[in-house]
Length: 92
Image (cartoon, rainbow, N blue to C red; front, side, top):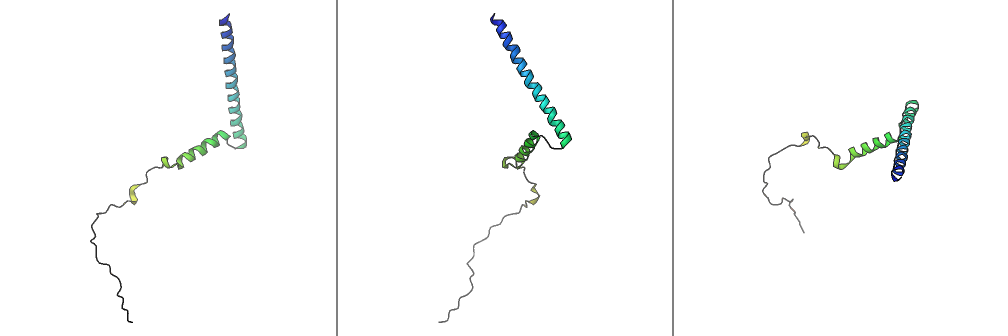
């Protein structure tokens, strides 16, 4: 008798999952038809587009810039010299 109850629960669970799957498919088809007739994208598409744009702006996703702006030069030492201040001629 216990196996009969388990089979009943299995059939009930499969029926529930099948109903959810059918509802999701119908909502998907409805959103595609609405998109086709009105030209407005579904909310899911808008959310995914904004998420992709946010990811591209993220600092950890920043791509390395082209190294064309970097100029490599040879360094040289500059010896310290005395400060050259303008002469101060104070006449009291």
